[in-house]
Image 1 (cartoon, rainbow, N blue to C red):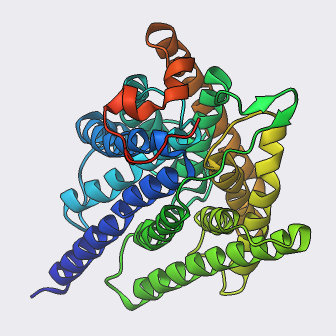
Image 2: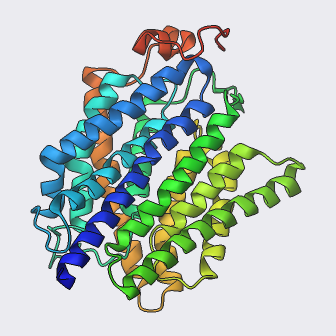
Length: 391
């Protein structure tokens, strides 16, 4: 066997394996969100996650991939493997958005938005960052370094979520007379399971983004990338536990899980470039940001049941800026410009699309439907029919 053929086969297998790990994030998002919402909305949340994977992947196959990369050509691995790896990413942007509007969003208009995000909005973000680069040789050309998508994926989902929250508003009764009504999670074991599935998936998310494992140098880079990814998650969890205990003498597992995820989001921009110690700082700052951002968004009455704005938007920004701070040859101005360009494009386009869809088919469920629960009215299947549904 020729060496080139061997490298082609190994890199194809590595990419397919990484894609499978990323797909583990689909049940990860589903379990995390199902655990954080009330029992009367669990089936709706699970249906949304299933449909996002199906719809976003299909439109990316038919339309989005070609917009993002210009062609299917790839000489280093199978073109089918290269496509599947990129396809595994696309639904994550919408998972981030859908989780943050849980318990009051209707499925059909959300699926219409999924089509547009998967076919056009997300592929255009990929185009100007990782792909064919339609902004090349313009003042807006991005020199941002973002290995696996702190901005391209996580902040993209976060900006779309912010647009959706501004249009559809908070859950019924969440904010009354300036006070915040606490709505407890329905299933903590599912939250923890979802968090760990996401964590495991991140190893394919970041490690696979190196693109090759078929040489000693690339194999070492992949291993370092995965190690640094894990380290940032550990640091995020630990710092959250410390802060929560110092402030409240309590160890809130939902905050610890989300802060671990915040650390993972933050490291995603450049886990291949850092030494083994820098991810501790990046992940710890990311975890702390989650702890302080969650109550901040509540003060603005941005109702986010799963903490997606704090985890994905805030840490997508932090992780992208961190590359310019900690990596010598990368300009923080280039990183900042990338953040701003993506923010303006995604927020404005998402707001416009959601606003138009909402005028035709309301995004938000009626008050009586929201009170009864979306499971009964949106999917007709209750996740826990033997339990009394919470109001």
